[in-house]
Figure: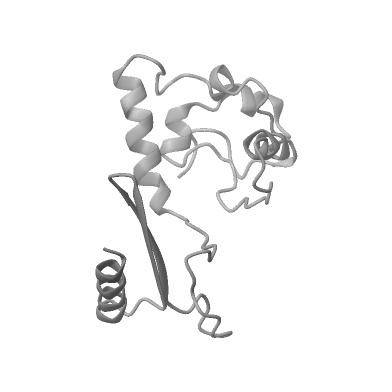
Length: 147
């Protein structure tokens, strides 16, 4: 099974001129992995199945879908303040931290800098450390004012 995934990944990377990619597929209790190309065109470092890529915007699709499933289940509301679900969430602007909603986050209108890539490690507390690191973030604009 892994050989088939490797051949497919290699072919797709060539076809779409992707410098490097890593793939993991979990099916029926079996993990198949494949990697192709290079992580960085400048350095030429080979991509491996353990390579770490900045995942970027592809997570928006998953995050939006999962959030809207929670909305559909009446477990959260799009206009819920973020602090309702993350009580420890804080920003330099206390007022903004109180008023930012899930809708603001999903629509990129929160005013929070979208390029905040604080490394908080891989431990069990990585998410709580990230939320804590947000305390130092200034706003680029008021919540709901701009995209």
